[in-house]
Length: 279
Image 1: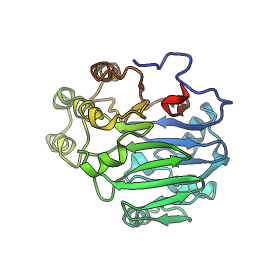
Image 2: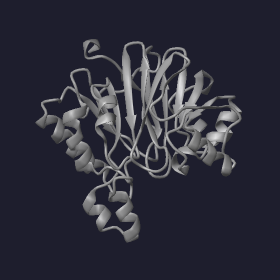
Image 3: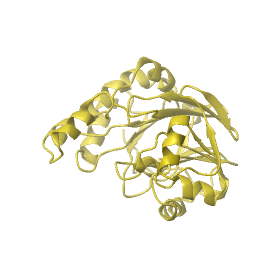
């Protein structure tokens, strides 16, 4: 069931462990704060420095804990604050060479940059990172972030999920995956036909039913936190999506799996990433 309103869904601010916080998720800005007791990573920087700090403050996410920033791709809703934020806190930006080149052309490339090819594994502080290519625009990647024996998989901005991507995401303790649009709402929207076709294509985004169907393959015995991300405010409905997800988890007999729909306008609380044995 959706435990979003239960007392134990969000972690205690003073608790120690491995946490995920969405600072905002959607077509107008994306940023995620992942932290252990001593360090943190910022995945995507799709808001201004001022807005990122404002949202971090609301969730007790301390920027001084950051040891690096990961970037999935160069679109503004993911990279708007990359240069200013990273330079302010002297953070290295981990991204692909092609994305770095595109940021350089738009004068949005931080001073400290560490590049990797899609599919590469690397470390950032005490975090073990595995990158993987996603089907979106040029050099879009997802990440599997490991800390100790826990794993977080994150994949947004992808028109389809390949078998290789499924292998990275399968049975992660926490899964963040996009559920961008409701197909009927998209087709009835005022968006240009060309844009609709792009969103529906393999380099576009996943719809609610496509994401729900993937859960059969992605949620394993270790999976106990599901977060639905990059939800369109214009072409989706938070409550409808939550209902679809709850129904799918009931069908799978996985009511034990915590889930929430991440929102654009407000940050979410801290989600504890844990093994099922920790319940």
